[in-house]
Amino acid sequence: MGSARKEVTIFTDIGVPLTFENVVRATGSFNASNCIGNGGFGSTYKAEISPGVLVAIKKLAVGRFQGIQQFHAEIKTLGRLHHPNLVTLIGYHASETEMFLIYNYLPGGNLEKFIQERSTRAVDWRILHKIALDIARALAYLHDFGLARLLGTSETHATTGVAGTFGYVAPEYAMTCRVSDKADVYSYGVVLLELLSDKKALDPSFSSYGNGFNIVAWACMLLRQGRAKEFFTAGLWDAGPHDDLVEVLHMAVVCTVDSLSTRPTMKQVVRRLKQLQPPSC
Image (cartoon, rainbow, N blue to C red; front, side, top):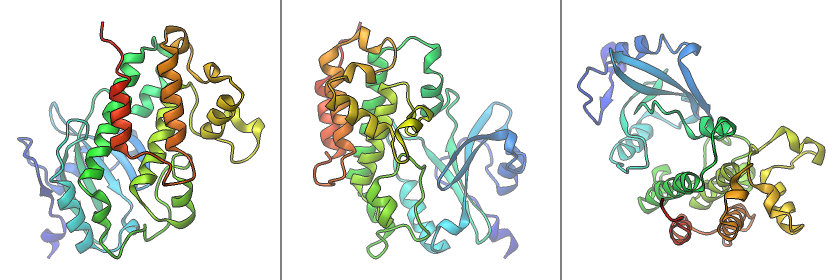
């Protein structure tokens, strides 16, 4: 029984053994020095399984899931997902005491790091557009795949409260814990607003506006006051094209409206972004 509990299920062979012991050792027993990200479901660690072979390990908070059997079924479905804009789920481990997912490691860092470090590089609308479109395509693929059904017909809500990063979570999800494709659309809209501006979802500069004021409220305020150009990060507005930038800003705001029926689908977002494709050099 002891060995069964340490089993790692592999979906993609990366050429080196991925055992429970190898993974834990490669993360330094999930040492904070190897932590490369934190989220609502747990922390992610960089792990060098063998010289030059890196993977990312997402250590999950065990209490977030209803049961091991349901978890196995859901993760096996995720293991079948393959899309150029999604990280690959290489494998996973799940027991009563520990759960982790094994992903391919992205040496270039994540989107959060890109946004944080953007002030150090020139802003290029083509790059921002490509990021926005690639994320939209990945979400549209997941929604086509019917990802919501992973929660099961009777489980259409998170079982232990809201799991997500504050500031990115749709208001209806925060209040009811009910997940939906349209909750993803809201989160996408927030990320799109961050990409276009030099502000975070809950930027410290918003403190003077009072509690609850976030990047969505800031975007709506500037649009309402005819000050759209002030929303965009330095250099982006100057580089243009102004009409397309304002159009994308409006789309991001519509993604974050309270009314679920008014929010577009991710397919509609993809379609609109493709129509606004900037010319290549």
